[in-house]
Image (cartoon, rainbow, N blue to C red; front, top):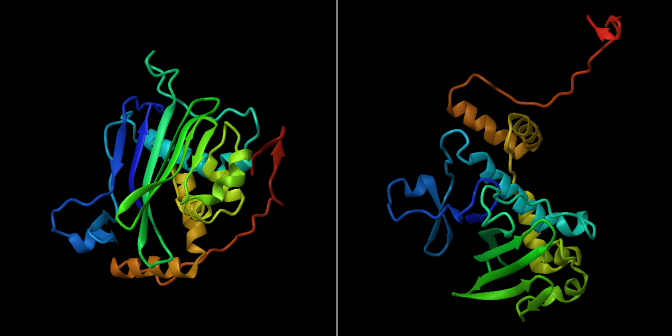
Length: 258
C-alpha cells in the first residue's frame, strides 16, 4: 500500500516532488474512496495524475519504474562497473552532476496482524549509490533499520539480516536487493511487494498485463461482475490462442502481398 512517493533531480523533475495517497480529513465518500492502512491512517484507493502535454506525467511513472527496478533488481541483475541507468535533470548546471533521489513510503502486513509503515529510499548518480536508507514504524516510533553513505553501511539491531550483504554489496547496486538475495526476512518481504507493483506506460504493456491478469480466475470474475453491473451484454471472458496459417501467402520480390 503506497502512501507517498518522492523524487528529485530525475528527467524533467528538478525540484523535490511528492505524490501522496494520504486521504484528506473530509469524510465525504470516506468508505467508497479510502481504506484504513493502519489505525487512524487512511489512504486513497485511487488517484489521478493529469496535466498538459510535456508536463511530466510520463516521467513520473518512469521515475517509479526506475525506483522499483533499482531497489529490487540492481543486485542480482547488475555487474561491477555497470552504469546505474539513472537520468538526472540536465537543463541546469546545478543538478547535472548531483545524484537523483527517490523515496517510497508504504505499508505491509506484519506477523502481529497489523500493517507496518516503511520508508525506503536512495540517492544515486550514473555510477554509484550515494545514500540509501530504510526506516520502519514499530509500535508508534519510527526506527532506523540501516543507513548507507556510499560504501559505509550501518546496521541496527532491527536489521540483523544485513550482515553478510554488507560485505557483498557493490557500489552500483542497492543494499536492499542484496539482502533479499541472502533470504533476509524484512528485505525479501519488501522486494516481493516491489515486484508486485505494476507500472504500465503504454497501451501495449496494458494489453499484455490485462491478458495476464485475466488468466487468474478471481480477476476474471471481478471483471465479469463489473461488466454485468455496467449492463454490458458480455456473459464470459476467456483467453484463446488462434493459429495463423501463412500457407496461402504470396511473395513478390520478398514482399508479402496476399
